[in-house]
Length: 58
Image 1 (cartoon, rainbow, N blue to C red):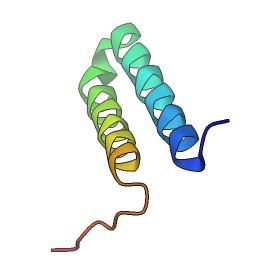
Image 2: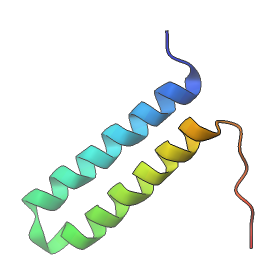
Image 3: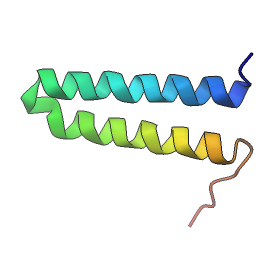
Image 4: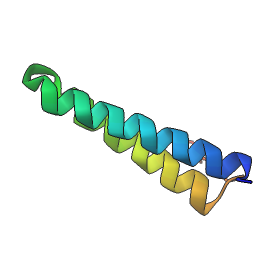
């Protein structure tokens, strides 16, 4: 049974994949959808690496 963090990371990666698919199918939206995918992927990495971590504000 996955932890909450593992499930969250999987959902974030699935969303990133969705944005990549939209980017491939819709060239006018490609740049924005690729950016969205990258952010979701980065957050998934953060959740996996440190589930209770805090993002420091600048």
